[in-house]
Image (cartoon, rainbow, N blue to C red):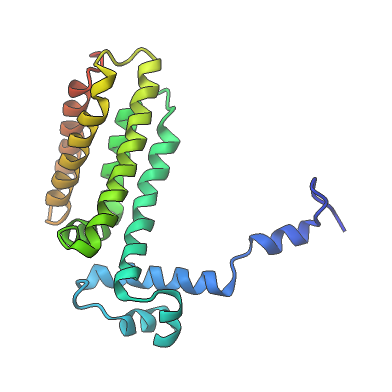
Length: 213
């Protein structure tokens, strides 16, 4: 039997990376919730409907998520992680600024998961959801700060580093609102591209990026 460097067999390593039945059920519940939110609102959605969509019993669904609110939180967090991952992966991009890549990631993920982010924005007015949404936004802003700091080491930014956080905080919340307004209505590809250009122009100017031709 072949062994890995740590002494475990290859088959053992494969078994450990395989998703458990519980993991698969939790994944199915998240997928079902995301699909239902394409067709209905949070108010209309029930745990029974989610369980049915996921192919498990209602009682089993409650084993993984104590309430509909917890399930919606988890779906929003999962969608937001796509943005985090994209920003982290592009922070050291050399073909463009890290800030540009962060903006691209935001717009691209609104295109793919806008129905989930729409829910996050709309529910953020409720106390039980607001803390979750604000925390997710704050982490995204932290990652954007890291991207700008990396751009600064490349000599691309001349603005005051002490102002980076405040500037990015305002830009991020402005981006959230403008993305929400665009992706919750019928729109064209040209409008998406114009939004991307507008956010990029405003952000780069505000943070003091060096203009390039």
